[in-house]
Amino acid sequence: MEIKRDLYLNKLVSKKHNGLIKVVTGIRRCGKSYLLFHLFKNYLLEGGVSKDHIIEMAFDSFENMKYRDPNVLYPYMKSLIVDDEQYYVLFDEVQLLGEFEAVLNGLMRIPNVDVYVTGSNAKFLSKDIITEFRGRGDEMHMNPLSFQEFMSVYAGNKYDGWNEYILYGGLPSVMQLSSPEEKIDYLKNIFDETYINDIVGRHKVKKRAELEELLNILASNIGSLTNPKKLSDTFKSVKRVNISQKTIRNYLEYLSDSFLISSAYRYDIKGRKYIGTPMKYYYTDMGLCNARINFRQLEDTHTMENVIYNELITRGFNVDVGVVTVQKRDSNGKMTRKQLEVDFICNKGSKRFYIQSALALPTKEKKEQEQRSLMKIDDSFKKIIITKDMPAPTYSEDGILIMGIYDFMLNEDSMERM
Image 1 (tube, rainbow, N blue to C red):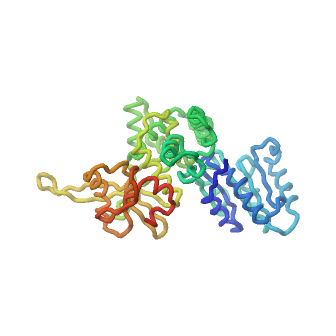
Image 2: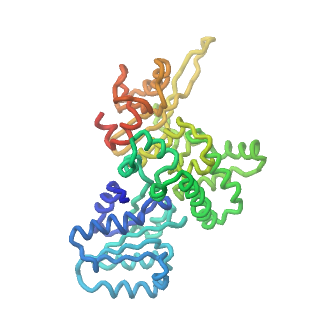
Image 3: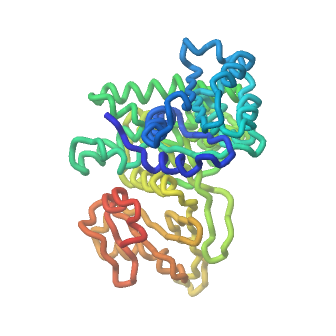
């Protein structure tokens, strides 16, 4: 089964010959190696590049262990570059190469060499990896499968596909498994044996149990506003464990840097400023999120919000949580201030969208409730409500676009064209 990842392939192609080291980052098992060694390599071959001008090295292969020594690898690489034609160097698991930063920078000084690398341990998944190359790296971040990519190879209809997607997520390896038991075991095992081990090893985390419990708390509270103080209080009151706000802040940073979770800051729309904490956290993949809570406690409202957030990130938007402050007179005639929430403010260049996620709009009152915060925004950018059971996109009397989750997820330009 071949899953096309055209979004990322096209991005990689656009970076060809730009004089920088192309670094493919992303959560482990999201398809980085497949992109580089299969999709991108085939693109090069189909474009006329000869095989001997594509130099591949997977450093986790037994037969390549000796090349982890930079003093062995670098002369070997130089011996393969025998003419002035363009060469493409593809390295996988490059973090296993000793002094890999120096080696890559050395290769970049060869005029006819274009370098592409991936890595899969916690060090290489870190968001600050580009600094390792002293300004000579060009990062391309890769996410798990979008729902559109998932459905491109899913055998059933979109309704069954949606149920499968929000339960087991979008890691490509999961799609290769047939039974629910296999998928559940895979997700639980990879979380414990790969993601957590990487973080614990890299950051020398002493309280692994508390780190895992933090992951569980975040998975149980998708879309809820929180901060280190609230989380510390939760540990104390529910788990009878004392853990400092500083430690929790560090753990949140480790999880975010490893792309397991993403954070959304609060933004005051009228005041045009960020508010700081509390903020929201979302899981990069719903299958991993559900694995943390043993595939129980699944709430459609929060799940849909998380999936929409991930889709917006995949489409290249910067995503914040919106706050609209309004004044209201109480029963005593006194003016009070109230904050209304907008689920997502999405920015990309000159584009901006305001989005509400609503599982259903069964009544006029519910529709008005979801529209209320959007109606208080006094600019001309498009305002959208995404709901699960909308037969066709339509505009409300107030000019707000209401569309179904399937229209939104399966059409990458849905927000612009409708």
